[in-house]
Image (tube, rainbow, N blue to C red; front, side, top):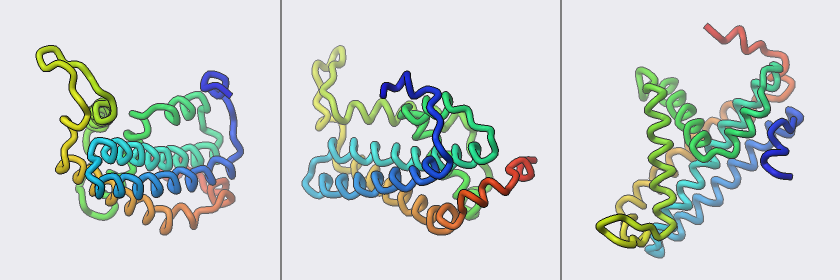
Length: 194
């Protein structure tokens, strides 16, 4: 099935909500792979894998959100599938979940400007690609990923991934795993809006 043909593909709520677990499983595996590569001094590849794992955590957030929307009959499938395939949208979704977590836990007193999420997602996507592919720069010539991603930046990316994975696992244990499809269908999300 092509991406274009999936644009309006509808999923059953239980299938969509179960999908979050597959995304979390993938992120966990990629996290372990990134750590192995870091331990073997393969910094640029480890950095890339850590960023892909971050996107999988964003996919988790997208599926939780889409499940709530579907339960209320408010989902737009074309938007869901577009975001599901967008690297930047997945990063953006994770940043929103992370901000919500920080706000609820008292780590932050307010939400950052939404434009900052987009700027961060754009930058992460650009740097992620430079960490994997040889590129050309006027005045510098061809640049190998290993000359861009050094140990320090790789360690920061892996540490951040570890924190984010912990946050999403906590959310899963404390909230998502205890929130059944039946409960989603019975609660009016409109009552939660201000």
